Length: 301
Image 1 (cartoon, rainbow, N blue to C red):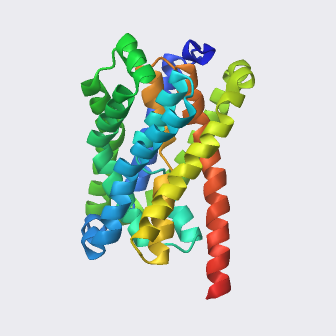
Image 2 (image 1 turned 45 degrees about the vertical axis):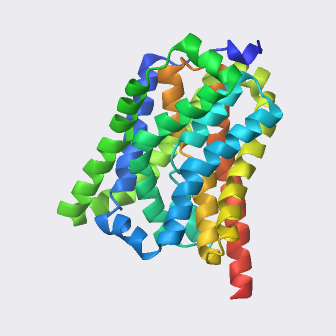
């Protein structure tokens, strides 16, 4: 057994409660800018919408499974990869899409739909793919994960804040617009500070084991971006939509993954390291890719 399969990161109940609140505020902040029209707009570009959702919730988990079978990481690392792949799109995907000269309206619609779908599809995807790979299936049996409890957690963390924010945006649009200007960026900054604090509090574990996941997260994130871009390019979608779907597939809500890891896996080392490092790395890779695409779009305009 790999040492990472036994390491547990230090994360107090108070810290977990704080992370829950931060993520709920982050989801609430995002939803303040969402409207029912954002879901309706998916009908206006059905090929791109379906491709984006299929890439996010079907192709990425499958591609992750193939990568796990190919590189055979420690089971806890494999579980972390599967957890990240099962999560919905990340919170900065809309900004990155705009920066990359992608289809921002499509990005917003995919974020809205993905957040709703993840309530059911995240626990389903994670349980399925982790269950069909022998080493991770064995760990799941030892830990005995309650799929119903995971569903309830995601509903509480994502579904309720999403509904509350959209209701406020519908009935109190001026207040929602004012709050969105502060709540969303502030919650993102607080979340990043929280992750960095977790790194610091567990710095000995990170210093000893981070080298196990740096290359793996790089490969996994590159695979996610390539999956979204490749499938949309193969279907000859507009270039702006190709960029959008690549970003929506490659930028994952690792914060949700971290909460689920600490709540249901007691901060299992390999899982937590993958999700935490992904949360940092996908910002770096996403910004770099968005900058390049935005630069090339301006050059060809």
